[in-house]
Image 1 (cartoon, rainbow over the protein chains, first blue to last red):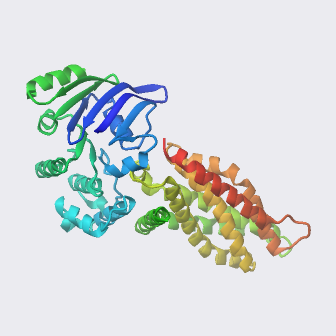
Image 2: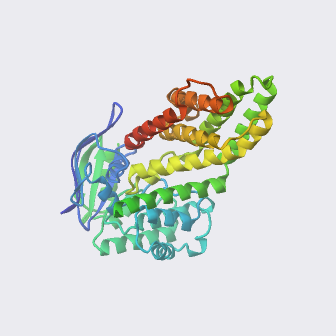
Length: 233
Length: 224
């Protein structure tokens, strides 16, 4: 069973087509990088898979579930880290995480929240308002939120945004733990070194279609950079 | 049974989150309260109130204050969700959309209700009218009607740039039946007349219809 199976996906906003026909398969336990110029449709694919927007046409299955009919079950299995933190700034770190733990019906919510807060290194900030945290700290809380319900599939939209070196190392460790338990990852980024470090397969989008779909093994930085520039231009 | 329990847990969690958010930001209650009081005071100065015309004017003044203050609050209660331009934070979660609607509706009812409880004695004092217990029932039913439609459309308007302008334009025409019913029912309390329609019954009917339609359509409104 594939983690994600996309066939002839189309998506338009009004009359403007964003995705014209996308075919893509992400196997279970695999890490896939989505690359493309701004507006290529990377975020749109992630938002469709997270159940935030609906496809205009095509079929999508996530962990064997149909995106139209089983969307609530899919939401239970998917963790999403996006450009936005998806946190409430007026609430504290603890209040935010407990709220989302209730939304995902996480058993033993308090223990799970404290475990994750400790894991992302924010145990001293747990009673601070999210609005008072730095961008990097907010991103750490966003990661804790996305991992609360132990998702099988992680969707990451430029997950390094705002993180310092220490934060990036933490993310590397969290991703390794996620993969170790059989989880899958689909992520977007503009950083070639992150692609080489974190993905087993690279997909590039151009004009709303998949224009490049190769395994990462054997690729070097210069070759990938050159290909990316050609596709992005 | 388990699904109902989870549904109610979600409703309570969202409601509690909104109350906490409001207690921290203090944006909605203070604004609504001040607005309602100002309307009552201004009308009190503006009208030449005498004993013989008070029952004709006072109910209208009360409901104008409540309706405008409610619309101010309805626009604000989604401020927490709009902080990052969308409802995505809630929509990402595996939560029944009806639970989101119900929590937002209960939040709006609570916010408007608190303002009304504070404004009612001031209204009675300024306009020298009694506050019979039946008025509380009319206020509750009227507020439910306004909040039911208002919650649905405030979510719809939240996605637009001109949301502050759009919300009253969308909501006012739809709540006309509720407004007529509550004003006439309040008038009936102050100066009963014969052969009046059963306004409270009509109000209950409007509330049931609006609530049913809103619960059924919310998912399509809130999702793309």
